[in-house]
Image (cartoon, rainbow over all chains, first blue to last red; front, side, top):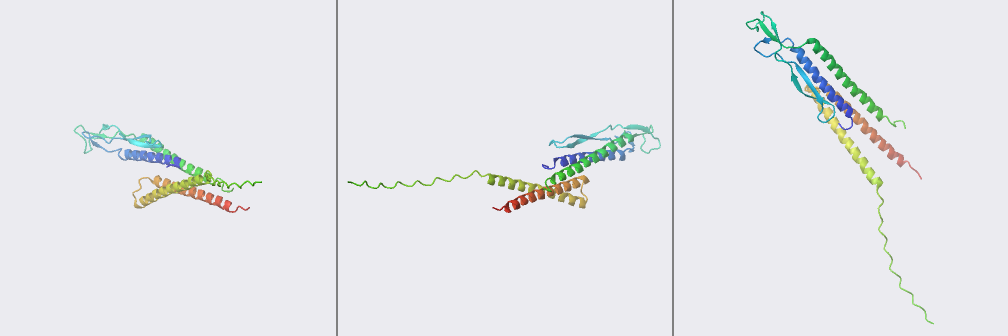
Length: 132
Length: 101
């Protein structure tokens, strides 16, 4: 993106925040996945954001996974419960996820605002000398 | 009394080679043409990208909604820039053509 650099950079930001939104969505969707205590719980997804390899913008370097231990809950009526009546739940805090959701949403919106403002600025530049 | 003979006419010196003027018009014209061609190539690339994403949006394989909107914005801006440059160049040419002695 040789001419419209700021638009391209904001685009990488929007993509990164979209992936963060996806990760939060995944975490919330799997928040109540009960498994037996012999299996691994759903691991919380963390997006690893880092500067882009080409130096323009940001990129997702990978996904880090949270604890597979989760939390052990006493639910003797659950068909997955072991002989002590315990099942394993993912260790995901909903309020933490909601906070991340708001940050990801605002970040996404901020990047799209940058695109809009940059577009307005470039269009203003194209008006230079229009009435000369 | 003796009359001195008329001397032979010496050889005429050949015309010196005309040195070409340093071509300001030629070089700057080439630069503008290449700049315009580069701009058109860039515009073509941006429009192709936007078209590809439009097809993806229609077929449902678009992963990022903003990708398409940003690509179409870029293509639109590049079109505006290219037409602005072209219009300016044509205006300059017309201005010169209107010159009168």
